[in-house]
Image (cartoon, rainbow over all chains, first blue to last red; front, side, top):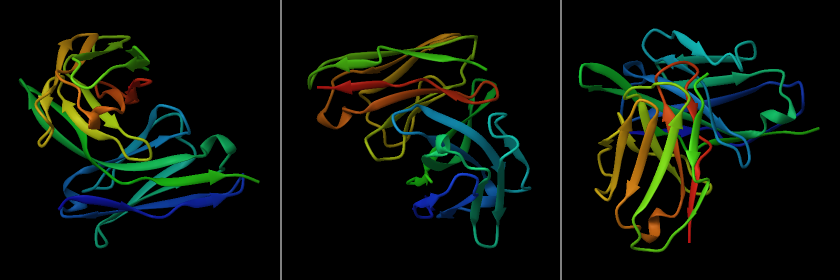
Length: 125
Length: 106
């Protein structure tokens, strides 16, 4: 069964960093890209970026460009998100999601087909 | 950034109703649109990708259509488990963006 299992809830103080893990099972992390998406309380989903599971290349949303780092450990089949300089507005549920793709006519499109259960990060003094 | 605007934001409906949700993009996104369902406290669940392709395991009462900048998600006969929030998502360009959601409630 393909699934993504995330690490547990975190409570951090402003200015601190947080690292969230996402372990893939039922498939090889190196065969797919992995997205990170967050959702603040009562807000829409917000895409943070993705990491290529094979070569480790990353693409970050400019909203997080200077504060976020995605890494992966293929031997552990696990990906990581690290967010630094935390502020109260970073309080959210953080999700990892597997990228998959298909042809739409002659165009290759992608989509997020498997999601982790989410990790709640609370930033509070 | 491509803005996605969903309408309505809230939809009151009953079991058995046919409901249609709309997603408008601020520019042409071709076929790069997906729909997700999210229930409270849960991760989003992929329903449709490529505008109209049903994800494996998703009931056939869900369907998607549209092109360019206007897209719809239709539920042909609403079931009790369909009361949830629905998000559209564009993968045409970076940053990937989501609509604000449509909450389908009783």
